[in-house]
Image (cartoon, rainbow, N blue to C red; front, top):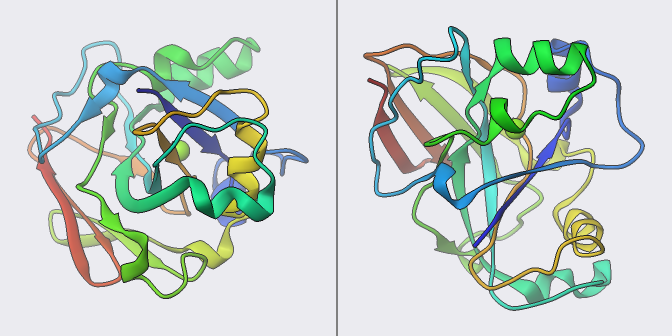
Length: 203
Ligand code: MG
């Protein structure tokens, strides 16, 4: 399976990192080895002193597809979840400054904790979902999918022009404002609406 992720998809987050608002979705990928499931512990890597949390709504693809039209995109996924796109911000800033790829800052081991997935039919409107991340019981990030710059079905149409999508592949749909550092000893908890979906420790 593969992970496809979207950067800069919420205006307030673009502003907090002083990035430019993109004309097209900003896309990157993470390898399968980035995934943590079942609330597995995240181990702080030794190559960074500034690992940031980015909480994001996830889409899990349910069938193979390419060159998908936006109006048919909803037929390619049945389930949603929530995850954290861990980012080595110090490393990413260095790479960005040199115009180099972000892979090391985004795709390292354990950089993609994901929740269990729920049927999308349990949520009346996927483009009006509130979600949040708490760190040690204190809310750090809060977002709503209605604030996405590029909406879910548009993103799917866009990425499917470049990547053959398979059942089980996961799309990270971008983070709202409020990203910030984690440290060993933290406990992260992610919610969709008021449902606790994901809870794990940083060591
Ligand atoms: Mg992200």
